[in-house]
Image 1 (cartoon, rainbow, N blue to C red):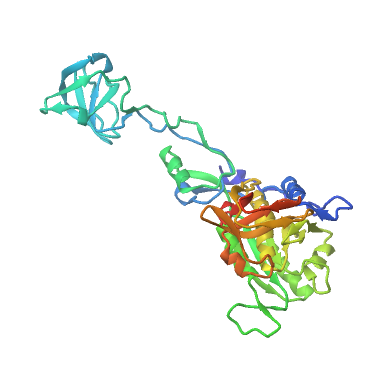
Image 2 (image 1 turned 30 degrees about the vertical axis):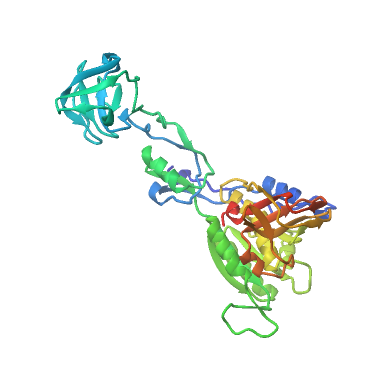
Length: 423
């Protein structure tokens, strides 16, 4: 696609995250449906070589330039024959001079009642429509002896039997894998139209935060969210932009947001998103009339501040690292996938026997840090959202539904490995 045809998507509306009047506690499924219906691709397109396109998201369907295989070829080392010449039982055929090898095809036509030496991947010569394995043949270099019959087309690959020329091989929105690169190269595609990587700015807020490794006052904690979120963004395949730690100062935070809106397509913040005296993030978003606080029926998580700053969506995550990770996986990840051009994508859970018991009350969805042990899912020893060690211990999340549920050992529960989210 030429540069003048590259499309720039429209900005988001300031009210894109607004919930219906009177909404108090938002079920997780309703929140996800709202996001799905209001987000669209926000990144531009570009054309890149196939060889550098790994992990990029297709901006258009991809069609094969030529068939694969491009010509009929042999699937084995052996001898090419004409099916119509073959008999049942023992027989002998003379060999023509020469052979067909990959990249060095036989020149000419093999006459009736003759055979030709052929190697794996070599083009099937004119006059040949079957290949017999060399292990099924004896030869003196001038003739071959074998037992028939042999099926027409035996041990051959037909032109286009894998992919036809002009066939659509990959669809818009696909995140390209190493196998995809091989498929495109095999079908003659040298460059591909993709979306530019989604740029995600990450900001931590709060005077109580100190940088890991630095001296910290007794009343401070180390900033765990920013390195965690930056690493998650990178593993999702997006471009992380580290905006650092913003103090509890409204005008200073305004400057952080202004800079983030210039450098990024999406802004992830943690902390300061509630309605307290020092929750400047929500106050600033309220100033723009682009703030919506979603009180989610979710554990851990609850408040999630959503807004738009200078046309860029802002996800105000809880300051608690456990809640920040869960909200990122459950809400921000599918939203960012939609913004990146990949479309709205939610992982499918595994149904796994529980190695724990729990009596869950109705009213909100719960996510437990978990991992598989010998085919059963175990959960972290504490549900406390302040236990950040449980995030490192876990290999996924157990999702318990909004309804009341009595989980007994052996009950099937929904388990999402972190890999299902791209981690």
